[in-house]
Length: 278
Image 1: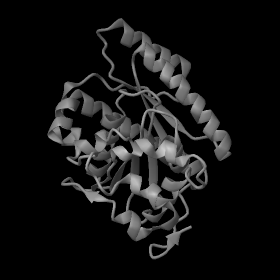
Image 2: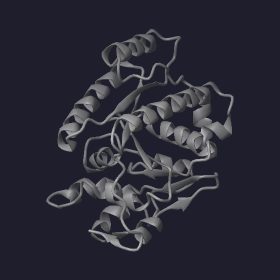
Image 3: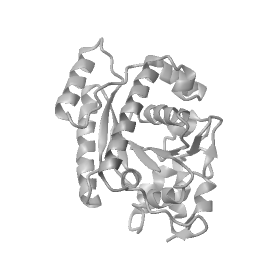
Image 4: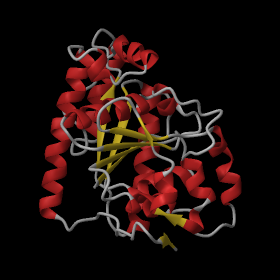
């Protein structure tokens, strides 16, 4: 099972769209995909018609029941979607209270790692949609993932957010004792504006090794797809945005295969489906 986190410490940079777009494309290739929503705003959950304001069982439940996690306990949180090969563990607005609850509590940083290890036989890919701030939720996502995708809007303020995100990655790499591989993905690019063109150039010049060589253009069809509750590749497969995400996925797939061929597996240790994780 490959676990990808989609993260940035700035909001409004296309994390949810990237998660759903990539997840849909991966599922369309025949892979079993789990989309894990840990953002209190619940945008991914809402995309699939799940109301985060009324959701009783959610990713928040993992933290509530962290001392008694089992395969059955985690699996009951999974909601199948109407789309082939796509399941969701939704968010709830209660996730916003987790930071305060986590103070002084042990074992809060590896909850997602332990939970996803229990589902390792069920999915080929897990994509984690994260909140736009550094806290216990993002730390969990970075600890659990094998690879990180960082969407960055091509505008000046988003570049500052990217800088903070890279600083966070460096900090996490020291605690993991292993660098976390990541790709910076320029999104919402509008070639008609000088600000977009300049920002794209700055991203590529500042992070030449980590930047995806393409970009995701501004595309109103993403908004229409989210309103309809349909992954973008099914809503409008010929749109420029879907074409760009398809190129991104092919690039990431090659990248992941290269990493797996040169480094030992970092798949979380599997736990017995019948037993609990301590």
